[in-house]
Length: 300
Image (cartoon, rainbow, N blue to C red; front, side, top):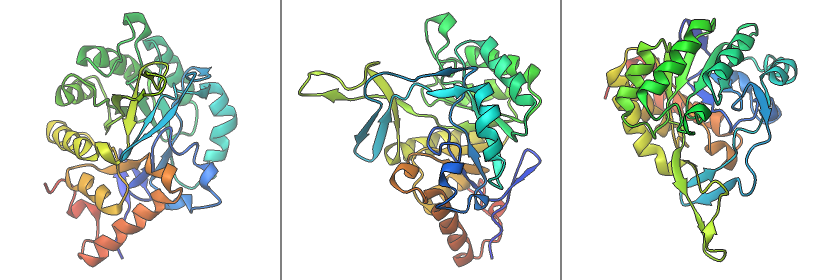
């Protein structure tokens, strides 16, 4: 039988598939449908220092082979997560990733200090958030901006720090290198691509903010290319995500160099997507005589 365990920053994950932030709730919502202990981990909804109600108007819009979302990081805030959601997550039997966003560096720092004191296994830093002090341009677009927030957070962080990269970066390889230089212990990519939809009858943008984030199968080949580029650029673990819907998709990312994968949009179509993908990976490994993922990781 294939050994699906993954070593990530000195922690052993039960498998290579992680429920992606914003698509899997806090994991416990799926407990009656799947065995969460088979997963490598669950990443929380994107958290901010203070709770946010999210964006007004349309939030989800289906598009061929994808989904456009404008959720706006709706969340209860870090302290509420610590007091209410985290205790339940601890019963899942799998690793806990806390996804942390912020509108300014100080918010990231304070949120990190609060999470330091908790049993979360990893902090995943969402640098796709708009820097409200610099005109709303996301931290993840310019390498200099990303380097500042990562270095500041790393200075106060007591957990393994994973930085989640935006595909909207000016140069994904330079962005990855800058984040690692600033202290990132690992990277995850990609977040959503900037996209748009228009309501023909109203003759207006579907989303109140005009632009929103595209995810799903449509982005997978581009995400795979970016993961491959980043894995060739940095020497830290890379978690790949972007349109993964099958075990074969996940294996492509691992062959491109990813240590593990996250599955997001597929969960909306099938709540058992993460565990199904895990089983498909195991079946492929058994069929092809692959005992551990280390044998194929980065082979391309």
